[in-house]
Length: 308
Image 1 (spheres, rainbow, N blue to C red):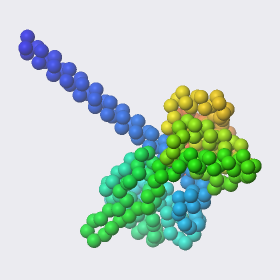
Image 2 (tube, rainbow, N blue to C red):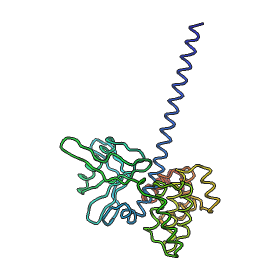
Image 3 (cartoon, helix red, strand yellow):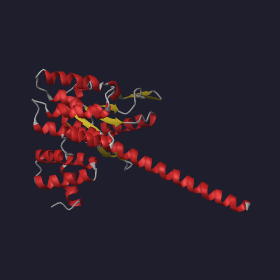
Image 4 (cartoon, rainbow, N blue to C red):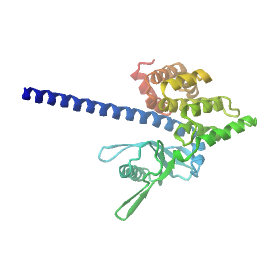
């Protein structure tokens, strides 16, 4: 009897270990999906509104264009960065997005990006790390040997969503027109600090954006799309449904259709719309974000999904 009991115990322990391992794997997959979700939104807003975001972050300089974010190292190791901007003085502003502080590991990775890209393109590069989540005091300096490596932190929790929304409401009530610089920070309001509940922030931000005067319809559609993706990440399903009912929010697919029309790809509006609907339905926001700025990748997706 004792031997049988031990055998059952071992079997039970084995099942428990396997169950915990599966749970850990699922959690890792969910965290990875959430991070890609946020990255896609941040890359999109930087891609369309860099001129407005840099002054908001306190970064000086004029944006001239967008630089590559991928390079093949001599060891055939692919280095993937989040975003690079080419400035008017020839320098690059390199952006990384972090919802978890990687500490030394992250700084070593960012330093390798800078070193390889600077050597390859012969340009000076400064790295800015946008920290979201509950990160307030990240590690921003790495000392190794005689060298010190630093990144410039942008702590989103230090920015106050309550104050931002309050000022915009006051401006709207005063009957004043908005500028792109006024509205762009709203797309990141869910990453900021403040006491206002996240669902209330989304509702207020959509109401401000939809009623804004002085900003083009294309910019409004882009801001709504980014805010929707952010809300889809941070809000619970019932909260999203309630917001849709309360403010009559456009469906994300409709927003993407408008962006598809504005893109004006030679493949045709109908193809672009069908592609965006497919990507949205499958929640492949990272592919959608890349397809809005990479024509070759968009063509690849047309072939992948047999959209003719």
